[in-house]
Image (tube, rainbow, N blue to C red):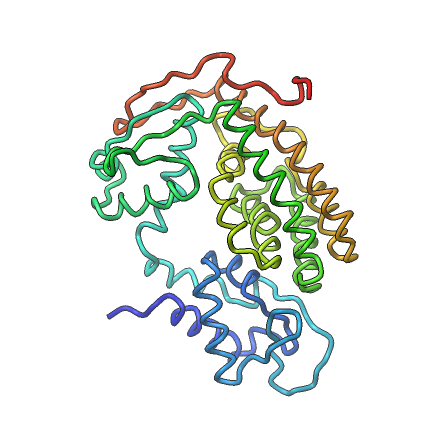
Length: 340
């Protein structure tokens, strides 16, 4: 029987600690580990708890752990990618559920469909197109449903609703109502080590832009708009946000897309840094204000990217999708051109 994911993570981390790949006094939290290993936070949380029980990690007052085998209590060190021997971890990656490995690839195509109209999906043909079984195809579609990208009708018919202007505006309305308030509550609880690491990662990406992978940009988006907000401790609000994230996911797949011309300016990095620096200062009001401003700008940027995609894309719809609601030229309007 294969090991549970959290056991695999615990085994890998244990090896990193015992081999001295991780320096003493390194600050460890589930968000940074999950981001570096490319996993969800739930198995990481269980793995860290297991390592704490073994005495390898010690609890920290800022909702994290410290690797301090000598008990010296020295100044904390930020966790870095090289500490976790990622090449070794990737060797374990094939043990991840097949549905998890397929979500990003299928999500990319579903987003492109949604920007070109409304569609009906044939789940059996979808499975054939990606060489996956019916159960895996169902698991993938269920994950995409949770993100608001597909809808299920009559328990068996899957459809892709068009991402048009009104729907995009509503999704960003929800995010603008919820995210700044969550951040305001989260500010006192976010570990300073996590914030410092987040700022460093944004600055590194800014220095190398536009030679930054879509996966890196997506990780930075998730860091601010999910991981840090989670420190507000409001699970109900985080659940409500999931179905409003289709605009964020659209941006993720279009920022570094070969289907549209590249952008001359960075997409969000400077704005994120401004928010993060306010969190670092523990200025909750300023962090809230900056996130509100960022979301308003993001809505306009995402709309512009979608317009460019619709105007220039040569994307060929997959055979498992049937068009039921064609996009119209006026379906997407840049919010910046509309009166408030």
